[in-house]
Image (cartoon, rainbow, N blue to C red; front, top):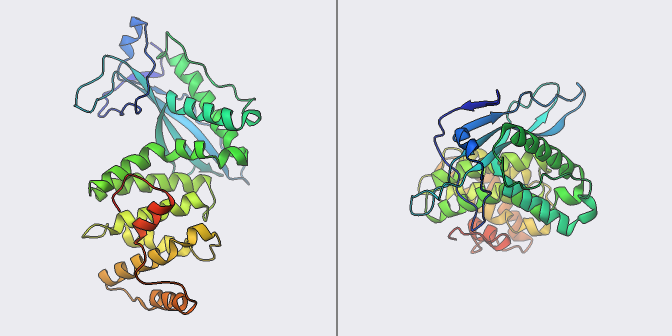
Length: 313
C-alpha cells in the first residue's frame, strides 16, 4: 500500500450525483482501499513575498465504498473518490481562512466538457485526465488526477471567459446551493446557513466584491438568516456586510434587491433594538425619487425572481 494511503474511519458519505453514473472499479485488489484517505505529499509553494495568489489545492481525497440512496440503503458496491478542493489566497504566508468544497471526478468532467463545448479554443491546452476502467483507486492515479485538477482550476481563473462562465459557477456552488435551498424549503434554516456561508467565502475569494454572483449569494444568506422566527446569530454580521457592499453598486439587475435588503435590515434592526434612522433615511430618499419602497417583494422573493431555486418564497 502506498505510504500516502492511511486507514481512517469515515463518518459520513457523499450523495450520488442526480441520476449520473459513477465509475466502477473492476479490480478486486483495490478493495483494501475502502474508507482510506490519500494525502498530498507536500503543499503547493507560497508565492513571492510581494504577491497574493489565488491557489487551488487538493490536499486529500477520500475513497468511499458506496453511496447512500434515498431509502437509506447503499448502492451496489460502487466506490468513488471525493476530492477536497481547497481554495486559498496565499501571500507571504498561507491564507489563514481557506475554504474547501468536496468534488468527484464527475464534477470536474462535467465542468471540462461544458467549457470545451462553449469555449473550445480556451481549453484546448488542458490535459484533462481520462476515465479508466481499472485501478481507479490507486494512490498513484488519485495523485495524478489531483494534480491535473489543480492545474485545470488554475487555468480557468486566469481566463476571464472561463472564470465568469456558468459552468464554473455551477462547479463552485451548485450542489451546496441546491442543498441549502432544499433546507430552506423545509424551514431548516439553521442547517442551510452554514452551507451558504461556505459558498459565499468561496466565491468571495475568486470574484470581485460587487460581482453579481457574490452579491446574490450574500443577499440569499441574509434572507436565510432573517426568515426564521428567531434570526440567526450571524444575521447582523451578514446584513451589515451586504449593506456595505451595496454602496455604489451600479448593476441595475442587482439594484432590485436593494429595497428588499433595506426593508429586511430595518426589521432586523427593530428586532435587535438598534437605531434605524439611517436605514429609514435611505428608504425615504428613494421614495422621494419615485421608487416604490413599500408593498414590494420580500428579499427572498426578489432573489427568486433573479435566480429561481427550490426554496419556498
